[in-house]
Image (tube, rainbow, N blue to C red):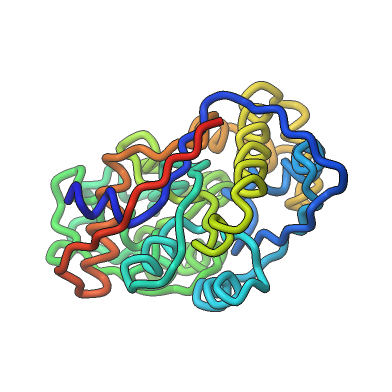
Length: 309
């Protein structure tokens, strides 16, 4: 396993800030698949942290991981944000690298209908996730194991699609007893009368949001990569230190009311990190899950690149 960890990604550990002098902003494109958990990038743009690092960042939404991966490898995209996609790509032999991790814990919450008071009450019940093999499904299985249930034998998972609202709707209609959602839909679920049974970030680490670049990008523009990482670190530090300012950004970005924005903040501020580092234990879990999904048993030898700030 250690050889896998030392050769799968070039992980950029960042702790100290380095002043970078640039004459003109470098244009970069960063893709995210959704909103809430990917706040780091939107806030870094809105608060000028990319600009401070000499970067003119365009944040675009691309829902399909395979589409984003292809764009990353052709150079049409500079960075992607889903750690699991980077892991899958690298294990499949593609030249992608995880260069920072901003959300080292899964932004997933297990919610259930009122009759289910605890995770163990889900034995024999049906749980809605997004797509089989995607993070909500994997994290849902991990939560069940944590509480002593066998996710393959004692519950049934159904794929309800990428939208959190559809999972809550299925619960509301009585089609499923529980669902794995991300914020702010845990808060929405509570307002609908559902129970929050478990917050994944309180139970284990499992990297979710980060910065993925191509090996070509790292080789040709290492300084740009460092500056992009720093902007994300600054954003996360701002989020932790400035509740009101962040809630305002969330209100505008999510196009929602302050109550929903505040609930999203209260969740994310506890789950993000402030240094861009990757936690090894969670990384090991992710790699094993990706290998299992891909049905890959062989070890990989990838060198470890460490960029110091």
